[in-house]
Length: 480
Image 1 (cartoon, rainbow, N blue to C red):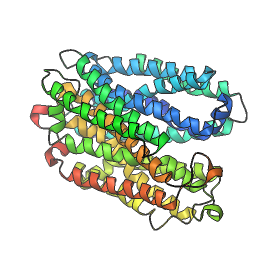
Image 2: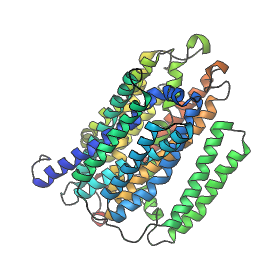
Image 3: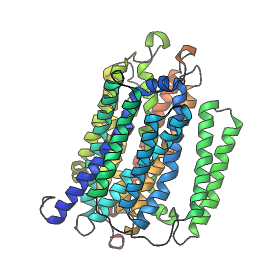
Image 4: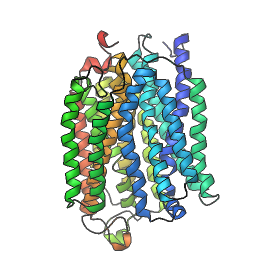
């Protein structure tokens, strides 16, 4: 039966179309700034190395806002929270356009991090909208694949646009473009998405939010200090240990709540923990490995003894190839699911990511090798980005779908942040990647990056094998 065979399916298609606009904006945000970070540094009169603070600030916000916003979506309705997060993202984007200083830009970039909850909320909207179709999981996976495909294509559009216009216009006008896009999307959501009430009861667990913020804040702060001061920093490790210890009272507190912010019992369920663990492990490569790949490609082999000696243009090509295959992986998810089953498609995708990064270990001397490596990893990554929120939603009760999908983004972000710190330590073992004039990162550091990414993806594949087949394919009646 065609997706447009009945009015409900046609209505769903219209909703997915409006949500595609949101993901187009998300892709622009994720691709627009990367090619012009050096120009932004010049605009703000700061060092290139200081740009790392923008990424760190946004990662912190991303890790902290997803659980409460996802819970709020279950309480008051997913559209309302999608509107709220989009308005906050628009505010942050406009701050960037007119930021006069490093501090102001840092605040704007951090506030802009609210967009990370968009995809989980969108998947929750689709999952709820398809509840009475008899094909809830199938339609949710298809919708998620379309959204992620649009996201990845928009990343390329954003990167190409900023790179082409940076020399032709003022920085203020250039930085205003993403703000305009997000503002337009705010209107699209307002008029295009139906407003359904929340399905969960209770209130927002402010005590749990405070404990979670404390734990994640301490861990993230420690990781940032490690990035800045190196692995020998005692205060940095002290912050990490304190953050991990803070998880103990957080878990105990949440288990005692009737309506917790983080449903520990749900996360322990056989249909949830493999998905959430996979998201954490997957975040190490999809969020943590991109900067090391870029710096490796730009390294001159005649000077460092390794690297591709690539121009900025080739690095854009490398990123473009990766993103294109991300989109292919997302768009073909329904086909691979039909051929291999939902669990088989997930496991295969994780294995592709593992193979893609493992190929870097022996094959990293030529540009064609880099392109093949990233194409393989991209196929698997695109499918996982699309499939993980949909699978989490399928294994959650209707009143907790926003929480379950949101946690896939939260755990992915935490995984990426941790990997970022590990990779920074590995790459700064000798020399400095912040200032190439002072030296180069060791090749062993890059080998460590690729090994960690490959092993993490392999562990994710094993975790996904533990996913109950009936959960991966269709929800149990109790979860409908």
